[in-house]
Length: 88
Image (cartoon, helix red, strand yellow):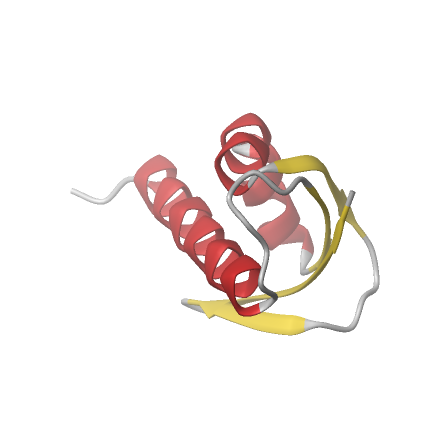
């Protein structure tokens, strides 16, 4: 049975996969550290905040902040995450 917690974890994992693909498309190496900016709905923000430590560790981010940004859109189920990153 898919619980809300399992669904949220699946969203977080798909988000990390999308960030990793974006890193790769930007030519970043695995050891390069980034600052990640995310624009999303309150529901999306709540999910990502619940997995903050796992996300920043997995994607090599020094920070993940939320706010308006233009960048790459990652759509997972009915949630849209627009991300931008910069190398730090």
